[in-house]
Length: 207
View 1 (tube, rainbow, N blue to C red):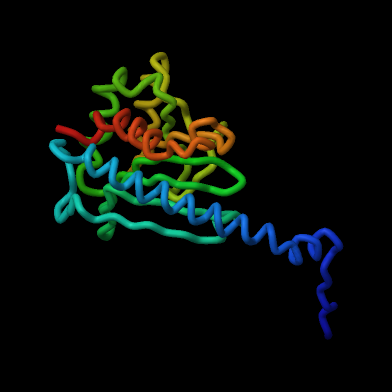
View 2 (view 1 turned 90 degrees about the vertical axis):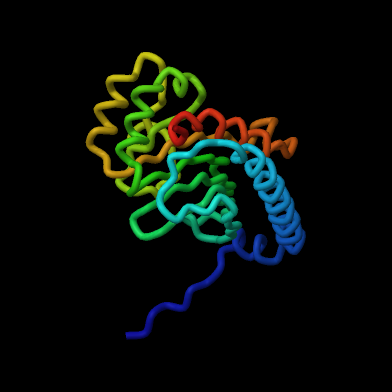
């Protein structure tokens, strides 16, 4: 049986034919990459001199810049630095632009060292609390939505709840999400925002 031929709505045709939109998208994409490259330089300076609880084979120079179009139907760009993905071992800080959603800075931890990372979160809880950090509740590291059912804010009065959630998890994702309308994002201060977030998370991954 023949399938009906798909057709475009007037709104879709208007968008498809809007060359200016695509030029603007290309310009925004280039600015995002520049900001992520600047973020890499700033985080390199932050990493220098830290005594990390890192997995075997960790290389402090490894990083990655990625661009894609389909994170739940939205374009995205991100920097992974520091970056370590080796089988089950994950030790990565990601700075993500997610079109239509937010900027996210997240620490992704799994495998070697996970017991110590979880212990640090509990033992150093009040160093982490109140800094706009949240614990991901998702069953995967690759969920980037935030809010009820997705993330749990790390607040000074929430230590027992955070500890209970951590006890049941085989991996840890600590995330901070900032609206794309935030003045710091608009002003291009991504590197400073990412550095501030990384500093807030450092107690989790240092000796």
